[in-house]
Length: 598
Image (tube, rainbow, N blue to C red; front, side, top):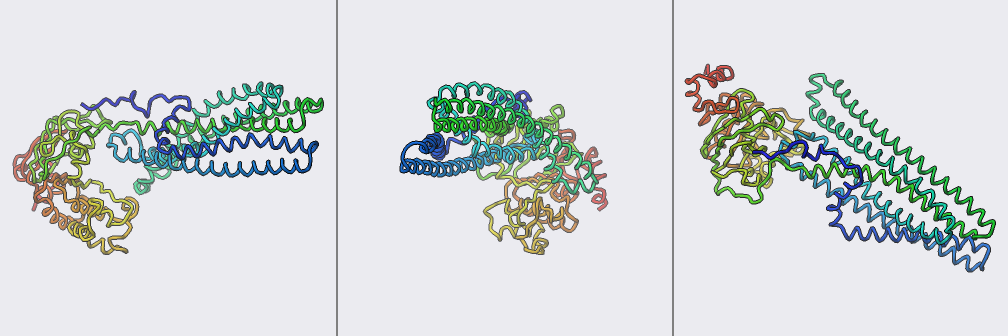
């Protein structure tokens, strides 16, 4: 039975945490770069230390105006400039190492997410739109880049300045430090309270953006259909609504963060003014020197700035925590179709004998409807078998079972006597060539599209495959011949041209098992006749499964399997099934009337 993947166990729908804890999910991507992290931390410690030393130098300068020689004053100024120079160099190095680390980690995460999703079975994309996956790869990783490349560094630096500044403030003036510490709880309260609100709104904002991206991706890929049905206004309205919802969520987040900033800055600088007032009285009473007050004031500003920066960074960390959580959720998802821990290998040479043994299957989106119901079929090696039946009979599902896009709920699928669930998917798929009903053409040259079937094929082999698929004539007529760019999803080609490229790709693959799902449906009669000749050669000595409504393809099959409601209802040759009557005869009369008249 298929593994339970109920919604309660789904990382995409489980309750989200309300802390920055999800950022721990970045640890596996940071650990490989320990040296770079160490260099960044060293630069960070140096710059933080220099920032804390600088006020001491300023104190010496200020007090030097009223005491000491000119030579001593020059030394103090020179020391202050030297500290500033070292601080500038350290800051530049910190920026370089931290930003480089962020870019490297984000690149690794993007690769990991893509590698995870590109191999997921179709059941995965039933639950998550492609556009949302792209949003996670782009938008969410951009937030993480901001955190690793900036926010974390800023946070650590300001924590060091905050702690170090407080210690040095205490040694400068314990009285004034006590006054400052009274302000800290007042500043932390809005950070903690409003920070949670910001994170919740950030998560909502990212979800809305992902939903908007998913809608845009889906409609842009179907732009011609949308235009043909004059659906532009509805699509614009829907995308506009989703985008507006994303904006509203973002506006609420910005508003909460703005209020937090207003409160924190007011409390911080009001506190600084109050402390400065007390300090000015101490200077007038000669309790402290002017330089000491300036030093304390600089430390107070550094500490206040650190607290303000940490409030900003906290908001960024919460946003990034939401993004990290979404990416980690995606990476944690388990594919319902899994490769076994130890894979069996097909016995060589692969003959192509196919067995369906009691297969029952329901699509995850329709668990109560059995697309295949106790399906049994034995296909001999080298046999050409056509699958026919009404829509929804399970014909294409047979292909999806054989390619192991889904696992049966009950039963097994075998190739040459080996259960395909006991093999890695790439182990048996490399022996299958597949031409889908809706041919896929990539945004590259025609040459590379055909070579997709066998990447190491030579130019002459590609051309031979194109000729066999009746594609050579139109390819040589393109502006750059086989090297012509065919556009996204082959938009520059007709449906029949795309289908011939897909057929050429399958011919080039030269696999012992060939799956043709309505492979000639978009061809004109002349091209179909040419391609059919290629198929006659191609299907020799290989196992071929054909889903087709065209009489020419079905009539030439060694055996025709008639499916209805997921079961085999009859099988035989075209002539025998027509003579038998029943479902096939009715289908033949309706769909193949012209052929029957011949």
